[in-house]
Image (cartoon, rainbow over all chains, first blue to last red):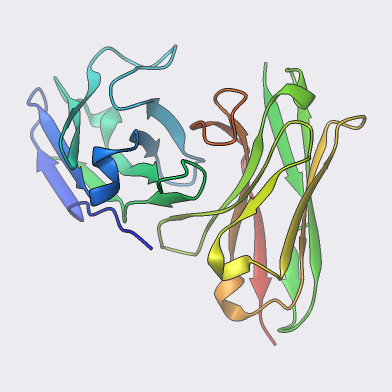
Length: 108
Length: 121
């Protein structure tokens, strides 16, 4: 099995930039994906294949990748960005998926 | 508009069975892989299973392999998850998820609102 490691929480003030990291050996070979989940709601895909932003996702959200670490970047953080964020990748086959433990983003 | 509506959740005793359904609309169902992802109360996300658009290929996470069966009826635009030998560790909200593309390994593109499964005596 393999794991993806995220910090449990990240806090930023409104208007600042939030960076949420996700690390794991699988990330050097497989794409990463990011999901946003607000309380009581289903998750939403916000970053596809490391850096692609799906239609309808704010331009303030972006993704980067370097080696075995990927980063979700939220610029100009707003209160509405407060949520849990999960990274996700796959094993070498690309089919058996794994999620990181999730990061709670708090807007101070 | 893409819609995924899960049903079939509820309270079941340990060792029991349950079948979840997911009715899809707003897209060409047969051309997309579909998955089940679950979330235990207060916990993170866990991938459960995926099925190809034709239904010919299925894959399972280790914790459910041999106990759960994913299937689909493309004539009814419906995805299923048959769950047997349930234990307390299976207690979770179960989400039906449409793949972002047509490959079984694509991102989890659109999520339903989920159905709660509680395994308890």
